[in-house]
Image 1: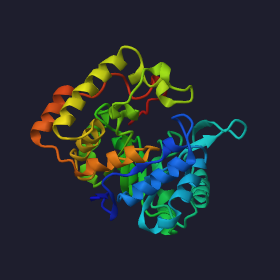
Image 2: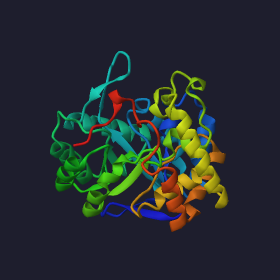
Image 3: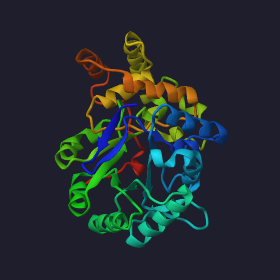
Image 4: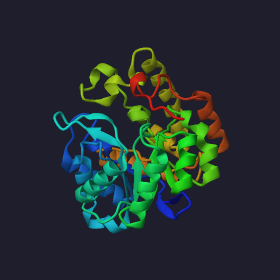
Length: 326
């Protein structure tokens, strides 16, 4: 597996990482044995970058990752996130919370759940308008000095937040949704290059649409995120299916799958980019990792741009949940 640098502080990760959110949350019921096998397979294939978060099951996902990587913990990079409040009664998020006290509490919990002595990359999950980003960055800077955290990241942050945070504590990586279906983050690429910040695309396969296995929205469980994703709604769904079929035809000329084409396209957008596709399937994981060896030439990139010049059809979140950047 090829390696990439995230940021200018020496954080090296595999070109393709593993997003663990879906093994416990948001995509319906899961089988832990299969998920554990998928994580082991990822490591065997050279993946050294594993992503989780407090929000994914309020510690359950972090506990899973801790168990899954225990035998090779020192060979990998673990990223997790803070930034939400939990309803003690119902267990649901009730808002943003990036107060210094909460950051420290979450960090201690994450260290315990992950069964580790340091967090390699700690992200703010979403900017908190009630807490100055300087206070957030300063708190993480203190955690770095204490050795509990090695690198600082932001997720779904805009240019002003990136600049203000970076001035206090260098930001190693920005994590934001990015795929052939979701292109809005490209407006931030110039500032990322200027500041030397790496970029980690989450949902790099369009919540699974770019695997070529999307189904009409009525086929998903009520707990599945895609049930409410605008890209699956009638009108958008049919247009997106058509685009994926065209991408499949192009991928076939490269002896590749549409997933591999979509991931290789992301890798071609910059050498500071490390996508984190997630899957519970060893077969799909092997397929995804193969994208790191797929080279796209100028003609391939032009053909992809003609199929999806501005992204997919439908927003990446329902309006009420769309992240706001400054």
